[in-house]
Each structure stands twice: as structure tokens, then as C-alpha cells.
Image 1 (cartoon, rainbow, N blue to C red):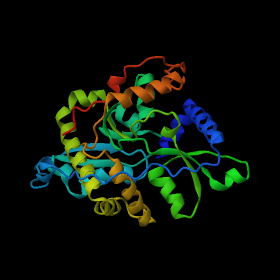
Image 2: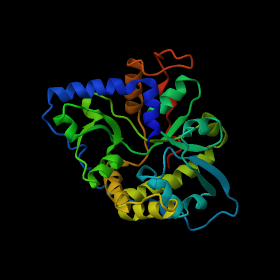
Image 3: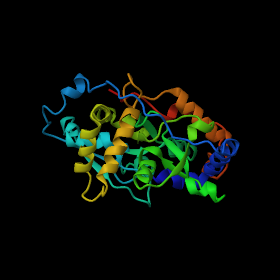
Length: 316
């Protein structure tokens, strides 16, 4: 989850975000923010394609490497559900999860061919295209931005304000479980266009060379997230069971986070993973307008083919 922070520190966008949020905060400094309202639990359940998975396993399996963007967490639950249910193997895929590394991003692993797919985010995908090392988003893991800038409640009383950029579905819940009182400023409440984060990515080369493999991967993955939408507690338990031992010292955090995210993986009545032009034009254009997207020589980028940044072609 922290790779986003490192990237944005390098391109300067947090400064703009803080200016926007601080300005709004000073205008209504006594107001409190409770974050995004809890969405309605979707009625969607895995469809006929998902129901047929797992009945047989092909004799020959093709290895795929998936690069994680952080240590296992509820952004990844659908992947772990599909592993637990053997849905990747049912599609002929031997999926290997490459552990998060602070020295190399999933985007680099994917663009260099060391990973077939990875978990990234819109800011990274836009930055990759700007330096001519493109990756392509093949699914939106969460349909709306759930990140926020937060401050300690006590910092307002002491006239000291330190902002931290976090995910409401993990760090905010973690803080609340520890009794830490926060002021929460969801960034989309302050003039920042909504966008998908995180995303599943692949490379243009992978799309050209292995389209059928990507379709099979996306079927198993979509089924995993659809299951997690309908069965939060069971899905959270699969994540706990499948992740390396010791990953979650506080399993209660996992269940609480899953309760928050399951209804947010996709809007009610919509399939998980689908992307549209509104999100892929609005926020990237905001980044460009803010001179926050730099080319390989460090100069601001003023235009980009936003439609090349994403595709729905592998969605079941």
C-alpha cells in the first residue's frame, strides 16, 4: 500500500492535495468528517462461469507471476480467494505471488516481463506511460477511491497539523481499533476527481502475446472478487489462511477491513473490475493540469492517450 506514497513524493502531487484540503479545512475547521458512507451489500453472486470453475483441473498448468504492491491485505482478497478455491488451477494457471519489494515496483516487474500481471494504481500507470514504459490496467480492484488525508484529532488543538495519506479501508480502521482519534479528509471530497485504485496491470507485450491466458486469469480473479463481495467473512478467512504465517497479527483488522471493502469492490448491480473513460480521463487530466506528470527528462507532460491506459477486453 505504501508504494503510492513513494511515487507521489517524487512527483509533488501531495503538495497540491494538501493545499486543497487545508484550504477547505480552514474554511470549515470545526467540522468533522466520518469518511465514505458504507455502501449497500451487493446482491451479486458468482455467475454460471464461476460456478463451473474448480470441477476439473487441466493436466498441464502454465505458470503466471503476479507482483504484489504491498504485503497481503484486503485489496488482494479476491486473488487469495481464487487461490484457496483452486480457480486459477482450474483455468490451467499455476499462479505465483511475487512478494512486495521496496526496491522494485510491480510496474517495473510487469513492464520488464518478470511478472505477467501486478497490482498497481492510477498514478503509477500514468507515470509509466509518461516515461515510455507503459503498463495497462486490466481491472479496477476497487470501484472508487477510498484514500484520505488524515490528521490526529489532537493536532488541531495544538495548532500543529501533520497530514498522512492513507487508505480508509485499512490504516484508518487500524487506527480506530487502536483507539486513535483521527480527522479524516477523503480526497475526492475536495475537488479531486474520483479514480480507480488499486488496479490490476499487465504489459502491452503480454496483451499481444498471451491474450487467452489473460482471459483465464481474469475469469478466476473476477470470480474471487465476486465471492468476496457476497461473502466478506468467509473471504477474509481465506485471505488469512492463504497468506504467509504471521502476516496478520490482528485478524480482527482483516475482518473489519473486509466488511468495509466488500461492498466497495464494485457498485451494486455492476460487475467487479469494469472501468470507464470518465475515471481514466478525469484524474489523469487533473495530474497533467497540475504539472504532476513528468517525462523521462523530467519535463511536464501536457497530453496523453488516456484510452491506452486501460482495457476491459479480458473481463469475463
